Length: 392
Image (tube, rainbow, N blue to C red; front, top):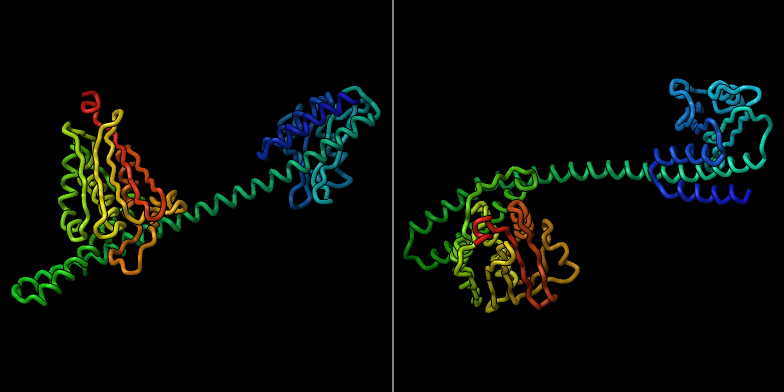
């Protein structure tokens, strides 16, 4: 008996070690048959109408298992005899499976040529049935939670698609009136070129309309990336040229804020296989982000180096830094650090999210580091070099 108890404990551990519902069913009948030496073993569970069906079995004919259905009441014994091909001299033992005080099934074993009951075997079978009830309850709850999680995940995905579609539609629709505003601003400049007050108004309107255009373009690009509607026009691209072009485009902004810019580019050509326009977008967004989050007169640094078959672009600043709690989420959509109330450079928290997606589309990675608030930050992009460049 002691050896049987040790086997029973081992079986209990095996059954309790999985939350897979089908695996629990299989383990119950397999381990029960092994421990009892039964010719056949079956686990039956009732449905909502009180009818029992075989959910797992060993040593039984498949056609009988599939067709079996009997009320889980006093009539079940007769039905089980037919299922097990029970003969008078055979041993037939069953134990109820009880969950929360209700009989939900039965675990049965059948041996050939053994009459009479074995008290030890009945006790062991009852213990196995109890363990099966607990394990099935846990597995059933886990399966229900998994299904609910899948439903919730699909709903979140649908909501995310709706959000992307809305943002794409919004940005597209706003671009049309914005284009009219930009044209009107240019007409204003041409109509009164000598009026200093109108010139000032024009500069403000032109600057803000261009800022709005960049926001709308980023919104549209994010929705396109998220829905896999951006196709890269790849060719061999010299990253030095991309960096220089991006800095040229932002030179007036950097100058207006009085930033000190340090640029370090290699003499050798670092070429990658990529879309030059999208790579320009990556570099521009990184530098723009550094400009936004650095107080006037701060320091920016942009460097490009080769490192183990990769081109490594670093954009660093001594600006407001990134809080530790925000650092893991800095590339998430619509996430941005807090700014002082008097900061005028708006943003939607799109730029770095777009950078991450575009870099990954080029087979690269991007990471952010910061020593905390007021300590500046550094963003590092790694892109694989072309085979020719990597081997040179």
